[in-house]
Amino acid sequence: MRFYALLLSGLLLCCQAVQAQVRSYDTMIESGVLKVAVYEDFAPYSFQDNKKPRGVDVDLAAALAKALGVRLELLWAPPGEKLDDDLRDSIWRGSELRHQQLADLMMRVPYDRDYSLKRDDQGELANGHVVMFGPYQTECWQVAYDRRRMDAVPSVAVFQEHPIGVEVDSIPSFYLTFVFNGMLSAKTHHYPSVQQAFVAMKGAEVDAVMGMRGEIDWQVHQANDKNLALGENAYPNMGRQRWEIGMAVHESNHQMAYAIEEALEALIRDGSVQKIYASYGLRYDIPEMYQ
Image 1: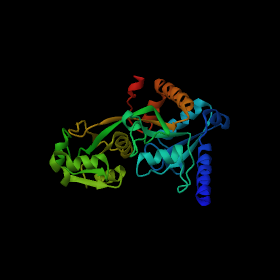
Image 2: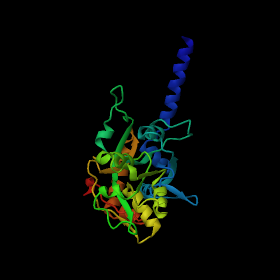
Image 3: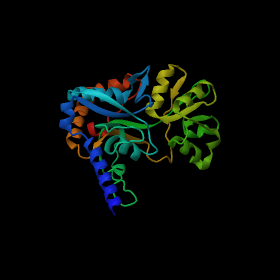
């Protein structure tokens, strides 16, 4: 019994130590530093170019820190198997295995009521330790194609004849493999990333690529090839095709969320956010909250 009592005491002390790392808004302001978690190696949102941090999320985080009168400190977060894992490691518990400290704010989190109310196996809120707020981007699916090998993409049915590249284990991968009773699966080629699918399109392995609009816009911008075009087709039977991206803080940090959301709205309304997206060749749709 003494062993179990000591073990429980140790666990409680560990929990308190981790909890102490969650900084209040006032503590963050006093420190003069806003710690922001961004995904590593995730262009065009957050990546390093010759060891210099770049990306939409990096630039927006810097603009938010400036608006709050503090300095930005980036915490590069490796993606976990699930978003729940990322929120746990970055916002409310940390990760000793990854030597990952807690952030004040995490970028690129779904702004989705159903997801925020998701329950675990015990009926508890799966992400009850975080507050998801501040939508700053509307995302959707997009096809880019090479006009040297395709005239247009009137519908996804053309991919019965033309090979298309997708990121492995992505929603476009599952969609093109199973839609229309699998009629497009033979022409669907899988790659480790959208970037590598574009490399394959450049090498004429595929005639088109499908992915998130932000990633597709970035690759087209980087390629600077007048023969690459964007499809305007729909995606029948795909389900939800547009969603909003926001941010997250610890559930005890509502004051921080309010302050950051106020700063974000000002940046959206004065056009600063749109300029950040345009600098990476990305289109920008204002989230519904600010329209």
